[in-house]
Amino acid sequence: MPLLFRLLRAFVSLWVIVTLVFVALRATGDPILAIFNPDDTTKEALDAYREQWGYTGTILQQYLAYVNNIFHGAFGISNMSNRDALDVVLERLPATLLLVGCSTFLMIAIGLPVGAFAALDNGGRLDRTIMSLSTVGFALPNFVLGLALILLLSVNLHLLPSNGYGSIENLIMPALTIGLAKAAIFTRFVRSAVLDALRLPCVTSARARGLGEFKIFTNHVIPNALLPLVTITPLLVGAMIAAGSVVESVFGWPGVGRLIVDSVAQRDLAVLQVIIMMVAFLMIATNLIVDLAYAKLDPRTALAQNH
Picture 1 (cartoon, rainbow, N blue to C red):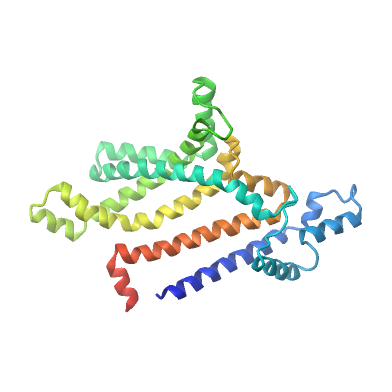
Picture 2: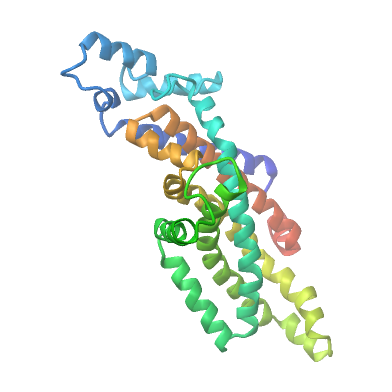
């Protein structure tokens, strides 16, 4: 598939998401009436706020004006802070990137070796134990795990602060909460990918030639197991942003996830649209990169696409 077509498809996907989100947010009712009490605010004041925040006219008129503003680099005004919505989101972005980055490192650092060990001990005691623990980690809600860590490490042991931002101590518990939950899922995918790779004919052939297990694992199992992991890893990283809405609120972490909660409570549609657009862009760009990476990791994919 030509790169230009992939880029066009990505642009259309982003445009469709932005349109659906725009319509859905405004279909819930007049945001001005949700923010201000019409009994305590004059009609002139309400109309002035609608004009300032772009809520005048029909939904179609608002949409056309919004698209025109986007192409001119204007993403709307936040009604929480009366500032540019993009600036409000960008202020929170570094904290979220730090949290997601550390959580991703924990997910991979735990999930890769643990999942591989489970696959190598397929059906054994270690495998059953790991799968049981991963099921618990997958089923346990993030806020429950977060509160449990607060009770253990903050309230009982007094080792870490329960909330805040600005130090490594503040980062440990939120990163553990997200990282451990996603590591439970990642472990199962690693185990499945390694098991599928161990059943490949090339592995059987390598064993028949007398190749050592370590060389078989590094030369045949790992390269073949990487393909499904390359697909699932970006999806799990994207899910961390959604999980951050709860985790950041529990730990008082000033990131984009907590901003989502505040924006929903305040009906700050401009900020919500910027966040959703940014997440959609990151996920679409990641999927595009994964498609391109497949051609490098598996030459058969590139050959099939050329034909």
